[in-house]
Length: 349
Image (cartoon, rainbow, N blue to C red; front, side):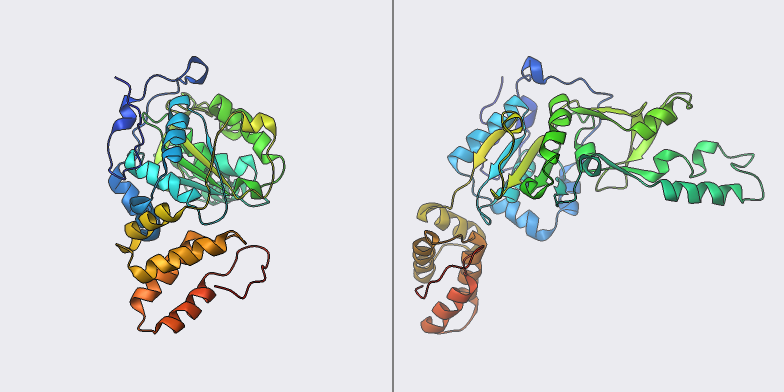
């Protein structure tokens, strides 16, 4: 039986992802052979303690749970927008942990990022150097007792899949991919992503050309984030289970309609008092009277400028850890919670 919701937001790991119904006919993929995704132990080893803590304590709203499940059912990317500090990137780690999707593949976007960067990196200079080194061996280019494929000069030895390229491998269950701060990209990147995310496949031209010379056309290439090689046949990669893709945006730009209609869009707003109390409880335990007063002050200031939940957590942590009087704590909290972005004139905390 299909399961709704697959992602519950309870932070309890489970295998509900295996109970997803079949995808819509227009989002079905048939890549193969099926690959086994990394297990939960690899996830914990690959994620920093900070990211793991945020994944374990993430407090999802009802709207977040609904739209994450919509993206999972429809096999569509999830575009998460909202001000800084609302947990956009943490959501990807929380979903991956609960659904046991393995380590999150992360692609941090800059103004110089291109689609090629996300798919794979190829270093032709290192290949040329390896070929020259092998040619200089006394026993010849490959050696009498060693196959040419093992001499280090093959293309696959100098190529590594990027986070997007790895996510689209034919894994038997979805991988989690975080494309962070897509709004910082070049204007062309969202449009460049359209075809790859729509088709769930891509080609590696260097391997396509090399496959014409290989007997079976299969190359073992390194994946992102691990020293693991996977087979790629004739330079073509096609997914099997569409990855759970989270694209985050701070709202610094608009996206083309063609891009937006291919995404499920979730807008995260600043938490209200109840949600903030839940966040504080998850990270630091039950909020005391002073913590609740900081929550009220945080909310009263939030209307005049952007604030991040991290700032509130920092202030509450220090209030509990530092042996200071109330006046000193208030002054310190004001310094820890400046407005983000443009300067806002305010003398009141």
